[in-house]
Image 1 (cartoon, rainbow, N blue to C red):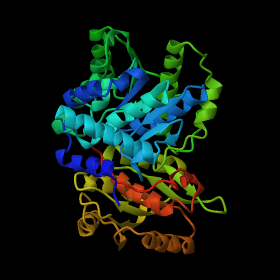
Image 2 (cartoon, rainbow, N blue to C red):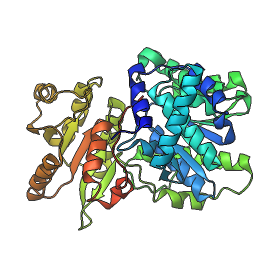
Image 3 (cartoon, rainbow, N blue to C red):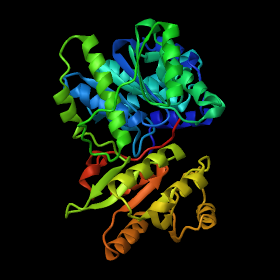
Image 4 (cartoon, rainbow, N blue to C red):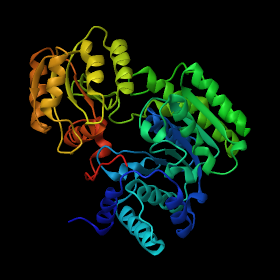
Amino acid sequence: MQTAGMEYLESRLMFGMVPGLESTRRLCEALGNPQEKFKTIHVVGTNGKGSTSYYLAGILQAHGFKTGLYTSPHLVSLRERIRVNDKPIPEADLERLLLAVKNAAERERIEPTFFEVLTLVAFLYYAEQGVDVVSMEAGMGGRLDSTAIACGGIVVLTSVGLEHTEVLGPTEEAILKEKMAVADAGGDVAHKIFIVGGVSDKLKVEAQAFTDARGAACEFPQVRRGVELPNLGRHYVENASLSLAAAERFIARDGRCAYDDALALSALKTRSWAGRMQTLRGLDGGVRIILDGAHNSHAVRRLVETLDEYYPGQRFHCLFGALKDKDVGEMLALMAPHVSHWHVTKTSYPRFRELDDVCAELSKAGGVVESAEELSRGYIDKILSGLHADGNSPLLITGSLYMIGACVEMLKDDFAELAFFRDLVPTTNEHR
């Protein structure tokens, strides 16, 4: 039976995505401004926000800070989005705080969105838990993202690509400014530090001009050597490098301890960001599955680069599903040289592309469609059984994060790498 709090949250879906800060600001005031009770490092960007936020939280926690982590979307449960020292918000606290936001919204006669409600719940929970700092991933954009209300002294920009152009702007330059402007809602920008990652030289000039105009500092950290991560791929090393730089700046400003680079690097060795170039190993230690939520063309390019590096010349059986608003044709074309057999799938989520649609795209590209079924554990097992008989190469599962989340739920009891999810009950998964 669904709780009153979850019923209220799901009722917010009808409002979709509404960029703007007025509702969040008013509700924060009605709830006692919980966002002012902790420090924040804001992480914005087109891709890489989640892993950067996750790595950063681990580094700060290793240095003794009580650390919050706010990310979206989740893979299995809403509780994943709101964590303190790696532990998800308890169900009872989630329910209680959802109702607290509901009551405040009704008193103020405000209709907040799904994402705004969750952001307010996070603010309340971090304040109650007395966290020192929150590694906070923005939802979409920055300037008008509800998380901006809590923006602290450091902003990390991971990457910039053309996505949500109808809201964020038609060019990469416009999107960069929209994302960096997350700092404008959170006090005096002149005292803030912007740490900028994987962008072109042209965008670096734009970023420097943005910060110069506000009297803020702008840094472009080098990709670090010697970074070891469970997640495969240079792009995760790039994201971890940003996290190291942000942690060092935050700790220097905070002053209660000294930054320890060896400690930070040691912490990163254990930080596996789930569902993103994550390897799942069998009892024999061999890699059986590679999970990667490469949900757009930008992310697929990074996936392909990683396969070239770690599995040169190898072609995979690939389980693939994508949403209707993605450029599936380009995604499939980029992956084609690395795939021998395609296994097409979808979940019951209404935004998924139909099986026939994806199969048609593959046929046009000359791909071999081995099978096409709605996602189930039986479907995954059938593919794995065929692979085992065919040389025991890993199964590549990629595409929509919603599909990756469904796979995690199905596989969590069988792979040690997914143990975090075993006590989590699946809940509504929305990007809003």
